Image (cartoon, rainbow over all chains, first blue to last red; front, side, top):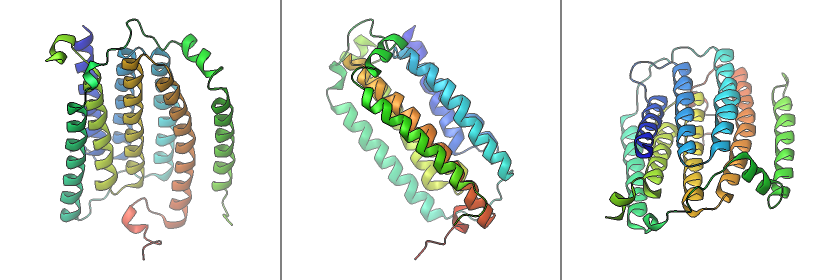
Length: 167
Length: 106
């Protein structure tokens, strides 16, 4: 049953990820954004299979909710619509594709030849909100506080950037 | 083969992560729309998160998941700043096409 779930979610993740990057039917950024939402939701499914329940919830709330609304908001704001087709640089595309394929092949070979398969982990391992929260407020207290400063800096930065007359 | 006995293992999750990362990388290299390049970046970030969660599970250590928690937080901040930059850039240049944004080209 768990294997079945893995294959479903992995397939959905990769398919939707591909449709974000290269959609043969539409070149509208909104379509890409919608497929990115689907990718994130199927990734959350994989997180659930891995026992990371809290992270799956956060992934859906923060990514599929907040971040993607921001993306859609900007796409609509800029009124990008249909992307105009331009001449594709074939050499660049081929070189890029070959290098990415080479990277993927290398990394896959590396993972395959390592002895990672012997790791199983303890049974019943769960990243519930309770377990994660306890770790977050003990060992990771300092990073947790720092991340709030990062968010504050981001807020101030965004306000500054969206001023009409940038000096 | 050990994998056949135990079903889905760490290798499988890492393979998905690598493929997703490669898709994101391909998007950054091949696409010319700033917004889509930015979405591909998010794809790469998510692939890294998946790898971390998989490692966390198969090592029985929650720290990987805490790391992903921080990654998601930083990604939210990063998206806000990046999109503000894109909007500011669009206001100045009236384009979202990377080949038109060549002010820094030597």
